[in-house]
Amino acid sequence: MTAADGVFTEETAAPVLRSVALSHLSIELGHLYMDDFKAGPQRLREQFARVAPWAGAARRIAADEPAGRVPRVSTCFLIDDYFTRFGSPDEVITMLVAAAAEAGLEIDYVARESGCALADGVDLARLVEQHLVSEPWEGTDGSRPPPSVTGWLTNGERSPEQEPDFAMAGRRPWQPPRQSAVQNHSIFLDIELWSGPADDRLWSCPFLAAVWQVQRLGLLRHLGEPVAEPRPLALDDLPATWDGLPPVGQLRPQAAPFRAYRTFSVLGSRFLPIELAVRTILGQVAIPPAITDGIRRRAEGEGLTLPEEFVDRIRYAFI
Image (cartoon, rainbow, N blue to C red):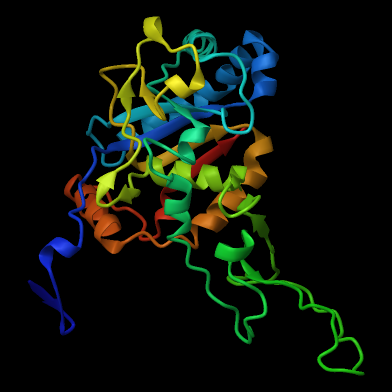
């Protein structure tokens, strides 16, 4: 038995946290949606041509922190098979890899967006939802249910309802919403996390993208174990259906680890509002200190100083 703050617990009561292999940097080379696929290989070639200079710059910067180290850098690509099913893995992934190669890029890992919702029997989205900690605004009376009930998360105080305080009273004057960590002027966000009934949720794109970032940073565990571990994926033996594809497939056997101390995503400008929502969500996700502290200590052992807030380990280039 162990004692903490006067409370005795069995040592076996808390699961042992298993660490994961980490690269220094994970570079996301893009997302693929049905419209991109329908536009054909040329659209992908043009996209990868724009991505390549940014991916190269990210590799050079990683090599300079600290200087003289050969960085471990992996690349990944996310395919939307959650909101729409298009093509087949053998067709889509083969086209992706070929288009990337024309721009001098190699894709180490391909991931399914549906694998950010459910992977290997683990409900990843609900796992992250359980880590949401929303601070009630000063003066909150409890009339508005929490995000776990409504499916909506905000970064501040919504405009008060315009109902009178009591019978026969006049309507209260309108008040604007307010951002919590405001600098001069508010940028207020109200984000839908899911829709549908509680037992059959349709998770929103920003929420699945938030799960994707937490996964890439190596911060997600289920009963102490990593989830959605990458599995080998051979180009000459790709499954014919998306359900036959692992949540994260490793295309290159010699690739650096999928997860990393830091992430960098090169995305089209259309993703900017989604990623703003992602950062707002992650700002209210509380990862157990045993996980975050362990990763920071490992980074320090390699001469890296990571930001205390894990959301600040995420970087982007919008092109």
